[in-house]
Length: 215
Image (cartoon, rainbow, N blue to C red; front, side, top):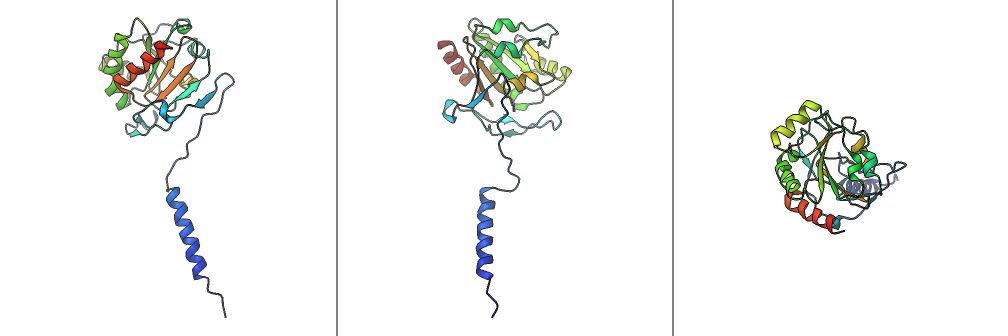
C-alpha cells in the first residue's frame, strides 16, 4: 500500500512556520559597515549607553518615522577626527578649522534637515553647547539634504550659535560609520572617538560630555 506522508508533511509545515516566526517576512538584516584603511569599527556593548530611536530613511524617501537604533555605540579608532574634516566647509561658507579638533575634547552632532527627531531635540543640543562652550567644542554635521534646507533647519531651530559643517557628499558621515540620524561622535583629546546613533536628549548628552571631559 502507498506510504502515508501526511505526518511528514505536517512536521515540515511546523518546522517552516517556526523558522518564519524567528525570521518574520520583511525583516531587514543588520549589516556592519566595512572597515576602511584608516577607520576600524568595533561594537562596545548595549550597556554603554541608552539610545532612543533615530529618524529612519534617507534623503530620497524623506522619511520622518522613528526606528529603533540598531547599534548603541561604536568606537572609531584614533587620530581620525581631524582627518575626516580636512577641507570641510561650514553652512556659512567658510572653511572649517579641522586642526582645532586635535588635542581637544569635541562633540560632532550629525543631523538631517528633514529629520523630525533632530529638529525636536535641537534646542536642547543648543543649550548644552552653550553651557559647555568653555570646555568642549560642539558642532553640527549636516547631511542627507540640500544647502537651503540645512540653512532653514538652523534658522528654524535657533541653533545659529553652533558651527555646522555641510557634508553634502556624505564623506564625513561615512568616515564615522553614521547610518542614521541623529547621531553623536564624542572626540576625546587623545584622538579616540565614540559614536552614538540615536537621540540622547539634553540630560544624557550633558552626562556623556561630563564623562568625556573627565577622561
